[in-house]
Image 1 (cartoon, rainbow, N blue to C red):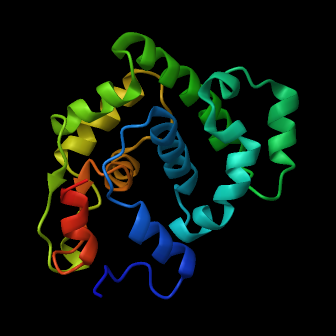
Image 2: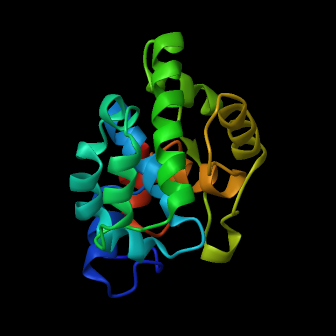
Length: 188
């Protein structure tokens, strides 16, 4: 069975690749989880984030934006002392701000899903790359998404982070064409 090369031999990365990455996602809580984890990844490897994902889930109330949006200084201090997550105060503060902006978008559009998928016109953008080096770090669409999210108050949502989010949430299918997931993610 062929798969993309980026998971290597890392079992956690293989599981993520085989079961999640590129699968079209429309659940608001999962979309929020992915955008938060992608923000925490800035400057780090995805395997670092995956290794801490279960800890993030506990520390951030299962990615409940309602709860995160009202975190106070005591909670921020608690998170800064939690060795199971990335202890970066800028990213923690951004997570709280992002929760507030996420809730505002839900109020305006009904769901975050309705808002975010408009950037790909409600459909997965299916690429047909044969080599990993063909996959871009960002696109015009991720540039637009980044600008709009920033305008709405999000932090740590540069174009590269937005493109990684698009890949993770299935807004774009960047599985290589010989990867078994390429076809699967087009029919999900």
